[in-house]
Length: 116
Image (tube, rainbow, N blue to C red; front, side):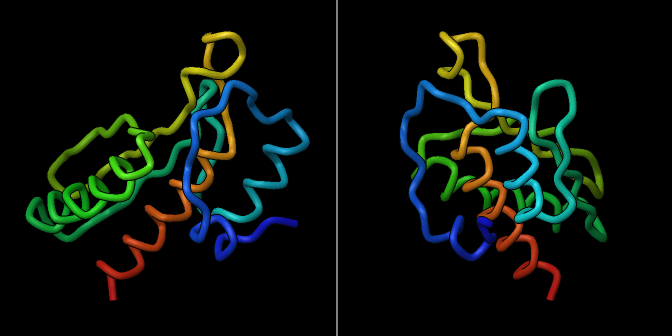
């Protein structure tokens, strides 16, 4: 079984093959709080105020850019919803790949640091 610690050490890479349902369920076990919604890996993060929310968004920017795997972010006063999917899989129709879980684990690690 894959763990969040293992995922954090990996670097995302361009993929054309997504994960199947069994693999997605296994990977979901490694990233607590994330769920599959409308074909995307999704989690909502809550903060005390807008400043903390924007600090989180800025902190997330570096690893997602470094791995060239950019999420959809919805930012409000005290919340940021992060959605990952991989556009290049399934013949360009999109889907979930290991990259989505790698970045989800990295985003979780950032959140844990910000809320200590």
